[in-house]
Image (cartoon, rainbow, N blue to C red):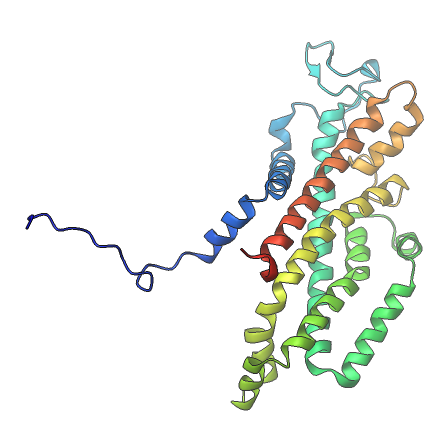
Length: 302
C-alpha cells in the first residue's frame, strides 16, 4: 500500500453548504440582460458620486461666449466639451453627470418612503384581516382615485417646488402598490403551518410578523421596489420638465430637456443627450429588476 494517503471524496451530506448569496449571484450572472442592467446602474451611481472627477467643468458656470457649441468643440482655454454646451455656455456633460444626483436621490428616497409605508400597511392588513384590512384597503382605493399629476401640482403649488417636497409627494403617493403586493403574500402566509405553529406556541403577533412573515414577503417587495425606482426617475424628470421639480441653477435631466426643446432644430444635442441619459438609466434599472425577479422567483429556480 502506498504511504501517501488517498484523498476520498467528501460525502455530499458533509460538504460545507454554499452561501445563499453566492448561489444568488451565480443565478443572476446567467442572465446577461440583468447583468448588463446591473453594470449600467453601477456606472450611473459611481459617475454621480464622482461627478467632480469625471468632468472638470462647473455645471452652473455660464460663459455666453461659448454658447451652443457643438460636441467635441474646444473652448478658449483649449478644454474639450465632449457633448457641447447649452444656450448659456454651460457644459452638457457636466450638467448630465451632476443632474444624475437629484434623479438618483429622489429615486432612492421616494422608493424607501413608499416601500416602508406599503410594507407596514400590507403586513398589518394581510395578517390581521377583518375591519383593519377593509379600512386600509379602502384608503388605498381612495389614494388610487387621485390622479398623481394633479395631486403633485396641488401640493407643490402650496408648499413650493423643492427636492424635499418632490420626495415626499412621490413617496407618500406610491405606497399602494407595495401594500397590495405585501398584503396578498401575507394573506397566504398566515394560513401556513409554520405561522399557525408559532401562534399555537404563544408567540406574539409582532414577533410572528418580524420573524416569520416579513422575511417571506421581502422578496416580492424588493422586486417591486427595484422596478418602481425607474418609474420614480421618470416622474422626477417629468416634474422638472414642467418646472415643478428642483429649481435652477441645480441641473436636472428634465430641466435640461425643457431648455433644449426650444433649440431642437438648431442645437439637437441640448435635448438629445439628457434624453439618452434618462433612457439608459431607466432601461438599466428595468433590466436589472426583471433579472432580479426571475432569479428570486422560486418557480424559475433550476
